[in-house]
Image (cartoon, rainbow, N blue to C red):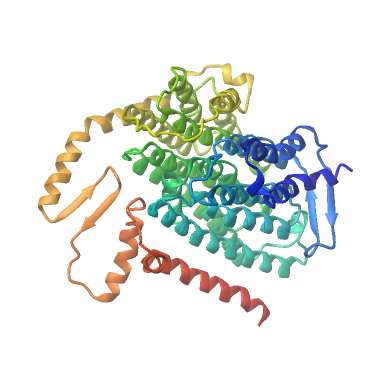
Length: 540
């Protein structure tokens, strides 16, 4: 009986999706995440169930990591459900939104409870593809962002499927517990890093994220930035061979990409002019830290046992705080925000920046202890990035853009979840103040105010370069330059790089055929074809 209840988190939302058009009240969507919440709170750890007649056999199990992801993810899904409009924005639009929301919720629950690779893949694909409807919006720019998200998601899904085939052929088993029995093929490891790297927005694979976070409806951004993004990290935790020695190049490569993500997120994020865009690049910086820690764990199997649980706690903190910041921003953009909202947003920003006496500070302290003094420079850089980005986010709130809401936004529910987000993971050590923890805060604050001082100088530089035939807009990360005479081959290389340098500057296409002319899309389609050929080669 204990094993049967593990079927409820994916099964209940799927059944509700069949009747989504008749679910007029948002509380029905709220209740769809209750099974995940109750299992995270009450189910017995170690329980499991196998359904041998579905696919190649579906295996479900609840471990400590899955319990935490299920529990805290359910809180965000429940609150995000209350942000879905209760009336149609267009004929049939609300029913479509509810269906995609419920299917994405089902996929998230399925992948968390999966004990085998194929079940995990089915849940991951269901969640990722259904989220297309959560990114899709009424504007042309939002629809284009949804198409870009879909292209990246398809590439990631195919990479994971190819990796699954290689692992099944090399090991002969689909169970996670059997992954360490045989050495992992290098091609499978590369595909896993690619497939999940898209979800966690590794540098170069992050181009979908600023678009989606800036243009998608708030209910979509909340789950994208929380449970869905952390699903990529959970995939690495489930699939990667942390206890098996690997070539140092794998761990070092992921570590360097993670550091690049921290730097990229900080440098581009602090010059954004939209609060949503700042939060988007903050996610890139934070996931860069997680990626670097995963790479470090691959190279140090002796430390992985103590480090991975701390990474999980840090990820759960981000899973809660980042969606809360997005939803708090939606509250701030109402006509009459309460006097309590700005202090609440300040608390969340301080917690995300790992301020002492918060859950973020406790998690960062535990991480420093688990690393044993190693990667001190990375932790300092990440702390500076967090403070600078949160300072920029709070600064932009002064230019509040009012949006008229058709439905009341559930401020009481947001407030109830606020202390959980700010002080998770709770630890009494968080209330032990140490002066050395202020170093990243002081450095990040200094960087932020230095940016304000240099703002006029940067504007003058931009105007000067414009007169020289170039246009440099540091505020929106837009780079336009006159192309010198070059061969067609060089132009084909230049165009995708130019598009990649301006992720928030894609002009809306009037139809789908124009969208496919985007060189970046064609590069991704080429990668899709290569991965498909690679998968088919197993059977030739």
